[in-house]
Image (tube, rainbow, N blue to C red):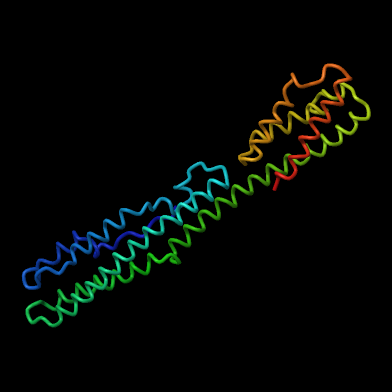
Length: 253
């Protein structure tokens, strides 16, 4: 799980309000609290879950769905850049405030040091949010790994289907030379019709969109109602099946 970088505690308005009491009256309004609220609002506006493929796309089966999620994550980086701008503004403001405090004879050195730390922490957070940082590198990796996993599943499925393609092609050639209902139907897991059913079962487990479209047509051949009832019907049935079978190869990885 790719967890988003949290806002450092020192950059929160609650922490600022707790620590500013020492110098609040002497320094007057600094605008730091408002700048911290801007950071908090910008942070909450980002949908961080979009940067982790597993969290953003639970149960995803299609590579096309993952690719769409990846594009959605890329769009979300626009909000991250707005957040970085808010953090940079806070960094610059506190750096300026630190210099102002240094010139004051009434503000304690500890307060000046504290404001300087806030500025330093903001700078680190600003760098952490860069799009080439560890978090976003891991985000990209999560989508790449999920796509690779789905592709592997497709390849395993293709491996299971290719033997059916060969056996159906071989059975089909035999039946075209010697049409026979008995040989078409087969039995014991062997035969032209048995091969059609086996391929249909393998296709039913696939998640690829195009294979799904192919399966819609192919499963009709697996029904008993499609089987020939007379030897004179065998040739036409075989030709129909083999013609559709030829469309499967290009769909496999």
